[in-house]
Image 1 (cartoon, rainbow, N blue to C red):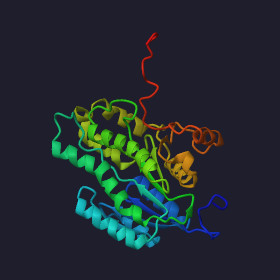
Image 2: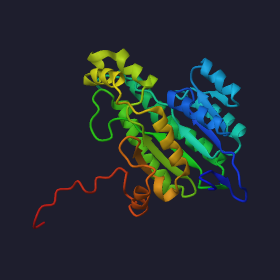
Image 3: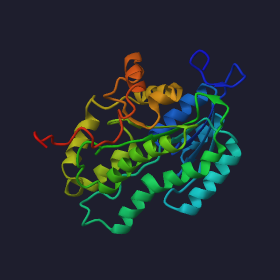
Image 4: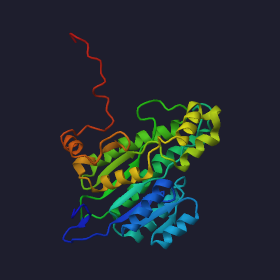
Length: 288
């Protein structure tokens, strides 16, 4: 990197190329705007067209339709994105859905299975299809960025499909890091951000969402939500951070000291930190 910026090997300037799956989402849209204003080439996918997609097009982006719930649509979008972007530096998976909300035994299983596809399987399909188009002439290495959600540290009642998918993404991030050493894989938990995803909980109501219904109302009405700028700043940090610091790890935007030299030094010497582990939770019985 030169002056904190991405550098092609043998060059002194950018530009970077990013693909944002879910560019129509709140975080994806804000990220696209920031990177476009910084001179990036930004490609992305949307499920529903909106005036914001037209705005991105006016800024120079190339939004492409993609229904992650359909394997054929996802594959077609990946093919177009690979050809249009040619060689990407950053791939962001910002799409997600909380449906279905409700106890596992009461929800329609097809809806539950469909949620797993959108939140996990389709995202793996995107990564699998687009990895061959990554740019291998960058320093640091190309980055694939996922987003975690609630439920990592507890049982999030009535959101099993969404929660299981996010846990799977966290582990898959570590597996990809172990298998593909020429690319960085990172996952961020943004915390409570005022985005459209919470509309699912509000629409479900307290009977299906349980205690999370009132908690969502309280959070959205408070000043405790994570500012969008903070989320974007953390993403930019991950984009610039070295592989031994970020790759294979799950970071909390709210609780971790990302961006600090101290944390980065610790992470370089702690390969299992911020990863899914049972180690350390075992009961040590004396004499055995």
